[in-house]
Structure formats: C-alpha cells, structure tokens
Image (cartoon, rainbow, N blue to C red; front, side, top):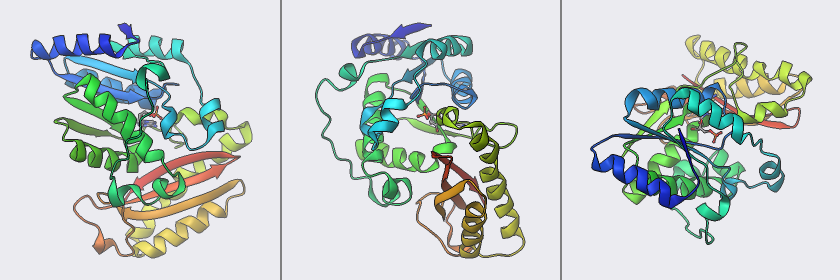
Length: 282
Ligand code: AMP
C-alpha cells in the first residue's frame, strides 16, 4: 500500500488506473479506524480493482472547535489497518493540501440537510459536501462507500452528487456494532467506563421500538415512546429522536406516509457528555 500525501500524486495513480479500464472504490474516512470502517474497505476491496481510502479530519465539517481539536488521530495504526485490509492507496493529505485556499462554496442541499443533524449542527453538511466533492473530483471513483451509521449523510451526499453531476455509484453499508449493540464510532473512546456501560441502551431502545410498530403503534406514538424511553435512562439525554422517510429525511407521523425506502428512526443522544448517533430501520 502506498501512502499518498498530495493531490497530484493521487491524480497520477487514479488516471493511470482509469486508462487501464480499472474500477476504483473510494472510502472516505476521518481516521481513528475501527471495524465499521474496515467493513467499508473490505467491501470496496471485493467490488473494485483499485481501492483508495482517504484519512482526513475535515475541519470544515466541525461546528465545534473543541470537537475538532480533540478528535482522535491515529495515523500509524490506521495505515497498518488499511494495509491489512488490502487497500492500494491511503490518501492522507494535510489541511493545506486539501484547502490551499478557503472553500467558500455553499451547496444547495435542500430539505434533506435541513432537519436533524442539519438543524443541530449548522454548516456541518455543507462542510461534508465540500470535502466529499473534492475527494470525488480527485479520486474519480467508480463507487464510493458510506456507512448507514451516518444515515442522513448518505442522503446529503446523494443530493450533492446530483447537484455536481458526478457519475459514480454511492454504496450504503450496514452499521457495525459491538456485541452489546453499541454502534462503533471513533468518538466511543471518549466514553468513561460508566458511560460506556450505559451507551448500549440506545440501540436496545431503538430495537425495542421496532416491536412497538409490530404491536400496532403509529409512527408518532413510537417516536414519543422511544424518546421517553431514552430520557428515562439515567445518564442518557436525547437531543432528538425522529422517525423519517428513509429517502427524503422528512418526519412522518404515520407509517403509511413513508415512501419506497420505508421509515428510519434517527437518534442523537448525549451519554456522559459524549454525543452519539444511531438509527434503526422500521
Ligand atoms: P468517519 O471516519 O466517522 O467520518 O466515518 C467514515 C465512514 O465510515 C462513514 O461513511 C461512516 O458512516 C462509516 N462508519 C462509521 N462508523 C461506522 C459503523 N459503526 N458501521 C458502519 N460504518 C461506519
């Protein structure tokens, strides 16, 4: 595996691969890699001739300076893991390489970006669109892999792809969890032992909410019961729990209002001061 630091070198290798008629799989990450990231890289490896994994903590998507400053950075371990997964290239640029000048682009992301994470983290999705559009332009992937853990992000990226006219396939990948149900996240290392013991309750409550639907409760009722169940746990505090159309991200109050992809329930929960996100499909 080659570690690439510059956009020029990345362009060289992907242009050569394209000339040879090879397919390129791209996995964008912010590093601190875990088994969730590995599942994306493994899938990209199975489905493409060339695998590029980007490792870049993108400053423009952080709306909280402390979060950016304390975001875990484990480059050496990340590169070792990627080598073990059989990735061909790790693209590990500096912020100056990615942003030689400020990126002032404002994407018209529309309703998918206005709710939930978009409402709670102003500018976050615009920053995601900035970095992912740069990575797509540079790596020229045939396919790009994203985790359903960041469920709304996938809808936002689809919208950005439509706006920018990229010709590529977005491949959503299932959430990888610890055996106790906690969704893997680079931020889990911030959990104290006490918070770590409580955090799996989030997934348990979301999984239970699927049973509530089976028992005949309407979407608005399930939303409220789930929100209450989260907030009734000592040590958990929900920022929101929203049941939405899985394509448009717009809230629904009746199951029948969900479109072709069905409904999803998306949660953001504070656990011992750590902001965790998770979701479930109904
Ligand atoms: P991040 O490094 O957090 O920006 O994540 C990079 C990619 O890995 C994103 O597409 C995430 O959705 C995905 N990802 C993160 N955690 C998980 C997980 N537990 N399961 C599956 N994909 C994940």
